[in-house]
Image (spheres, rainbow, N blue to C red):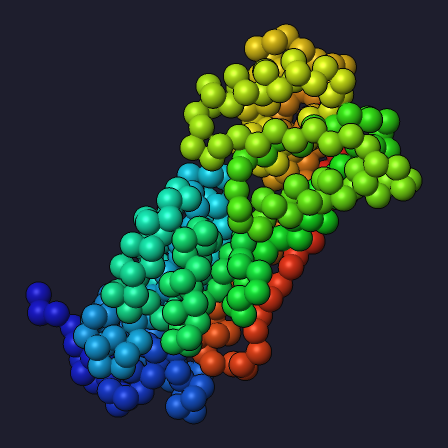
Length: 336
């Protein structure tokens, strides 16, 4: 069967090739094409299962109708949901998505950004690693539509959509203090990126500010590359060295799950032996008995704001920086 061409679609729909092109490229309003004509052209495209030659079109127009999405780890529940929401919104808006994970590997992040640039993506949503800053600066200088997600570089005039991590950690630590805990440990990973640093700052601020009396600070930072076995061993050593600790605040959901594993292996009880809370919700935290209290990220809102911001930039609607710091919510269960 012969391949259907743009000319064939135009002839079947009774319109010009230009009209078909405008409909395919989501520019029907700019071309003042009526809704009835748009629907007729779309029906003919669907009937013939017509697939535009994206490579040829990108060479001709300089636009690929593809978006690059670079996240830390799409196998993680949080980033996986972010990916799915962005993909659906992009597709409804006429864009295809190219996605990849960095696994927090700096060189891999750089390689992925360069690869997507070679594929002529029209814009990028990136969860950056520390080593990405120079290439991010280059992209900004070249006016590439770009939105940083989950974390950003303070002092760099970039578009970003992030969570108010400091507020979330501050409010959860405050909650623990109000519940009567006096020796709260914050367990996190070693990271220079601002999202993790702000969670640590929020924890410390709450300890310092509560009733103007500074509570003791207990912080355990795991090396990012450490194995779960290493983390369990370090956590065990930390708690033995700090026997007064009465509550555990885990900085991410995967560390919270690791904390539950440790608690069970030692036959300890929550909240009997330790109060336990975590940053980021997880299905396991809802199913646990008792359920685990969390700082919850509004995942759908974060994803929608990110793709909305990028499409806004791609379509050239305004020149002001888009910088959104979205508030988390606290979900209280019975682990404290």
